Length: 432
Image (tube, rainbow, N blue to C red):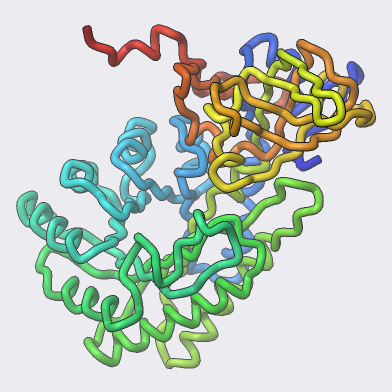
């Protein structure tokens, strides 16, 4: 079972995380409930900084907020020395309200609205990652209006198809993101950016996808972008000072998964950029990376309470929980596979095979098929590990289901960092 680093089975035969009995957490805070292990989060932050810093002092770790973002999460990554990547006006506003330094914030998005860009300019965002020709024009007009010179990175699509699900591939030729290398599109964007008086082009950004296990995709992407950096120098005399290579390093969702390590990832990125810079006689740009899932994914678990148990003789047994596609959409979006355990029977051996179903009015609301569990009873607390990334941030109110609470655990103490929605919360925007 892939659990946070502080997880253990306690004397009550219950799962314990961060010194807290998760069964007691379920009773105290209710279910569904996201439990985030602070020590696991901070440990991954430190590991990233050390792995990249040991190879090059000119690196920057930028946390990808889309994986999981809250006021407290912003404070944690700031304390650990990371920068922050946001991809919407809402994420940007949350970061601002948390007190996160805006100069350490990167603003992404393939269709940023004028209002979002104005907010970014007003707040003094450190870098805006420009995704399109239209955005170059819009941002330049807004910057001129406000009298602010804006530092930008151009997002380049390197034409690399990574070995991951098609829905989370972002670096291929047919992508909604960025300027493609083919047909001179990216080079034309460089020329245009350099011609706009209120934009300061400092470098490039690439991202090839998410939940990537095999590192050769990163190596190919680095070769492609460094060749382009050389081309930009030859054609227009622009020398990139910064290169953001994105994120996407995979994590374990099942014990059989074998993702590359952070240390291996760091070696491929840093040595790849340095090697290609040397090959072309280029000054090595500052290297930035954007990990998200690999910082918070394995730090979080989701707790549910088991309700209906339905046995269909000779076919399957359905075990229904009090959540589902409203708190974990990934199995329905891209067939994500999770493991599962009964938190109040954490040390018991599996004796039955069941399908874990959500409570929503959809036949496809299935969290886990063919799960092996101990004897299942109504009222048991079911635990799904590895839900710290893209769980809460993709939560929704389908069937008017209130979104779950999130608690942070450390040293035997649990702190609510996002409260559970109430029925009144669901109606707060309604008008008669």
